[in-house]
Length: 248
Image: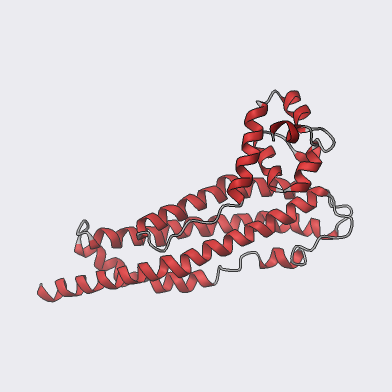
């Protein structure tokens, strides 16, 4: 496998699977700058460990084809840790890579690209803000509910938070953010490639479409798994606080 892949050009590899472009980017290889060079030539030129690059390409492909783990049976804290990790991957890896791809596109031949280059940074900014707000409000509120359930926090603090926040409010607000890429879909005509599109644009559209799929999965985890569990947790804590208040 290693010898075969090394003899292939960068263009051939990325044509086979756009995921390879992201792996090459991690190693400092911009696929559109080495289109006709073989993988081996590029690795030698850049002083890269050939076996490590090949292993990373193979591993990325395996990961992309792996089914997502089942979260339904996990406790709330582990689900939130999974979501935090996903947020970190989005912010530190996926979005910077996609932003680079969009920024370096040449738009002379494709009218939609200029609009995409204007909109995408705004989308990223808004998306990251939404993530931080979610972690600072919802996730912290859930952590407090868990501490309350374990009797590790003062009744006064819990009562105040219960009076001013509710999981249902977070859930309702979350519904309004579930279609964050609507504007990008409109600009790209649902990721429909113009005739004669460059490989660069093909990778951009593939990444955008894949990211939207990831966002839908992420939203499903929150809406269908996390929120029902947290609503039940909040209900239990409210009942306990109510009983204690009556006794006092």
